[in-house]
Length: 316
Image 1 (cartoon, rainbow, N blue to C red):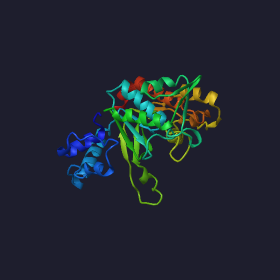
Image 2 (tube, helix red, strand yellow):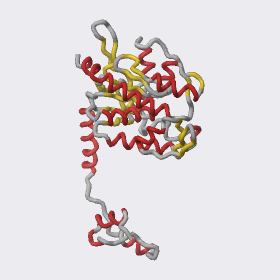
Image 3 (cartoon, rainbow, N blue to C red):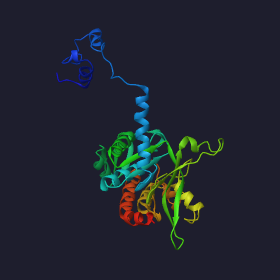
Image 4 (cartoon, helix red, strand yellow):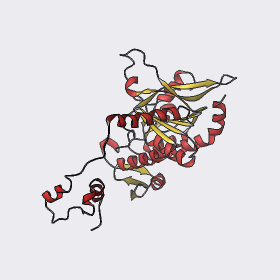
């Protein structure tokens, strides 16, 4: 019988028991328990844990205070953008800002809290890219659980050395610049802890932090507590004429509209995913996810195309 994970744990923790195998069917519960009696984790001090966390986090804050690309929102579109861009451009520093503790947005489940995730072709090519299995169903494919897609994509994004996810952090505002002709461009984001942002009305002034970046990709979803943030802020500062307002559900047209509409709406700001529905007045697509992933891929492509020019402008 080949050694197992449990065997390796026991052997590492209890050298005297090296070679002991995982309990076969003939081993009693008492005998099985005995081999764990001397098990113990390595020594640790509480301050060591605190320093291990805080030193790395503050180093990340320092490193990503000047980022190359900031992605607002770690839902299916934002994560797809992060994956595509980080793989294509390992030279870029990419910061992802997610308001929730848990990244993934609404992509942990399908529609109405059901498990399966449906994607229309050709979005299965992105599933192939990240090695997520699916069932073939003619013009569409089905992932057995949406969490399989989201957890796989998230794990791959977090493995990139040039990506940092700041979750439980929200974007409160945008950093803006004007050129000599008065044209506005986006030059970064204004951030705060999400819990702080939620209590500005009942606490004294709690000022934010900032991240400079020549390119920002906003994928904050349709209207909601933190939804459609960037496009609504652009409207309020006069950089975008008006919200189109998301229309009713039409799967047939909505997904194409989202992918084709993914673009740089003002210099330095790319909008993707369902935030576009609020910007353009396109339809919602409901519980189908292919356009979220492909919009993210398109947003990453645009970011790579405009980065050099926006980076030069950002140094002015």
